[in-house]
Image (tube, rainbow, N blue to C red; front, side):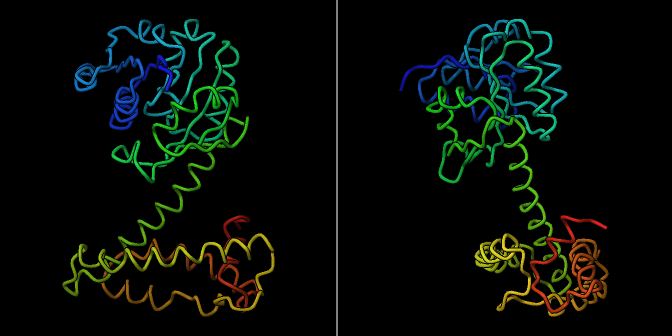
Length: 288
């Protein structure tokens, strides 16, 4: 692989993991962080730590930002905008689609090639099976630096609209967080029965993994727009009243399950109780 000079700005757990993958692959890697001390382990691996932000940016043709939020990106990059001109900026900071587009516009105004990224992994997964990074923005930059990007995980490109990677990233995270909340609700339900969260996790993990096989069926129904397709579990049958009652009887919050019940009831009350559970998509997509 051709040696690429790359700079990583931001050495939190994720930024450090990205930089580590670059160094270990033999790329000339410069690192910078606003607070001192976080570069020491990377320097031991072979990275160069820049004390000055301007030196860090000037060191490489591709600059990678992995910062706290969109405001942090501007706080770090605005003072060195002139130095970024003619370089490629790969921003993997978590942002909203509109924020990604705004940063892309800022980059274009300063003559910077922009690629936005959404990391679908935790730091320990970087460079390992299961890690993926979603990109949108400059197709030229994506293809030029694809060998470098692939070091972090499977690379997927979604088009020139810089906000698309962020949109997809947040949509996937929505599914993850709701699933996590559901697991924690279940753990709270059985806690008073003497069941530890660890024991519950042992049963919940294979069950939930098996249930993800239902995604394709839900997707086919949603895309087809016909919620009366035979073989679906009806909204009436999906009523979560017993689950809510059992939760309340144990003195735990019903907020997590209550949200789903509200989505179900909205469709039932509108006369769709005999139709499939996938119809709650309409409650989500068209809020009251």
